[in-house]
Length: 112
Image (cartoon, rainbow, N blue to C red; front, side, top):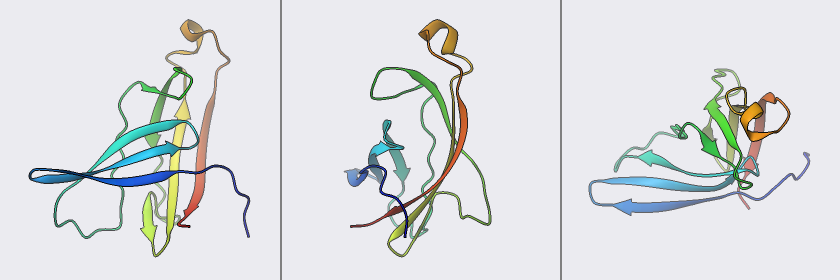
């Protein structure tokens, strides 16, 4: 049994010719779209957040996938999303007036 950290919501957004997913509150910090083509039956989330990514407080980050074949980077397995990503602010921390931060995360999101 794990520790509850935050809520996250994933919604399907339909556009003509392709679908995307809107992810709200990933890592308790970010909202972004994930492109997902019509008919794609894979379990992976092809996250490619913009650079810079702005968190809920308006701070800038480099937010990227952290590949991990064993963990199953950003894969939906039954009702569990395995999230593996890196956050760092090396390009922005001085100008944003915050401390330097660099962290790799491996988290599980469980459907409720």
